[in-house]
Image 1: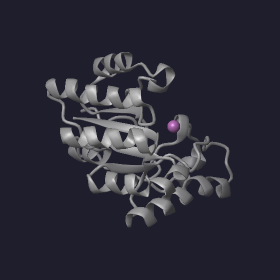
Image 2: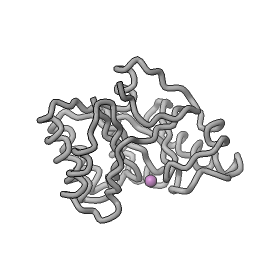
Image 3: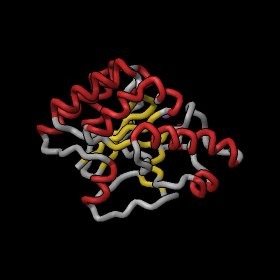
Image 4: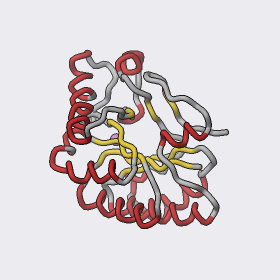
Length: 198
Ligand code: NI
């Protein structure tokens, strides 16, 4: 089992192509969304939800969550949560803090599990499809969480190639919730999770 996760979207062109490719392959992923990009992409976000993908919060406009006042934290996290709730009609979203930066306040105020990652190919760095595919496939491990960004065409290409190669190795892709549920590991609000290794 392995979880593909995507940060910094939605971006209509690339996210839509990714959703098409995941749908063709019967793969569910987890998307950590930027609040400011939700309003103009409500249909894309609803499609994610309807097709069984899991959705999380990645702040309203991609700021560090550390050293914020409660008011500023809520403007980033609670505003995005409210937007997602009004877009989707439910309210069970995970949190991934930008840059993985956390402090005690973030944990106390998150109000949901905080999901980090175990495999980071830094796909944003050179947007090199072949390198990203190689690094993720080499780093794949049962229970892993892969971090990518669905705002780059090269990352969409890489993600679909990764799915095809890991399928050949016998991996099953699942959402973060499904991954931890399969391992009998409860996800708790304010706690941090990097992987669900057996
Ligand atoms: Ni990010």
